[in-house]
Length: 198
Image (cartoon, rainbow, N blue to C red; front, side, top):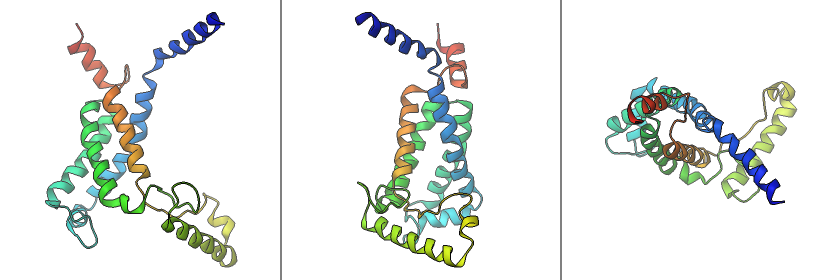
């Protein structure tokens, strides 16, 4: 029995030869997320700056111009660095900060769930009400619209806008901070092998 367990462990350990796939997958998953966030802000920086600074309908942050540019360039530039696998551990830090700021200033008041669910551990009064509204909207669309066509690209949902996505991205970035960009398919690995290895 011990021999079998050791053999299975040896097989499991053999997968370490392709362990570069995990950080590569994290990088390639996160890159479009941050690219879209950054370039959307960049497309109308005046509105982005106003949103960062306005306490009534925005984030109400101090130094809105500085913080808006910092967040925008961190997200867009971070996406490029993630794809290249360049300075991944370094860029993970400011990207984690943007996720914390987003979670606290935008999403926290909405609870955990990104998509409203009417039941379950993380359901709140807000998400239960959203589910009821979604059920009513479906009935209206089934009665007065071409429901099959309207749902042919996917189901309708109500965005709850909770911290779920920001927390998930933070955890993924935290993993990249500790494990780095990965071997072979990153500039970081090439630089390490060229300048740091003896």
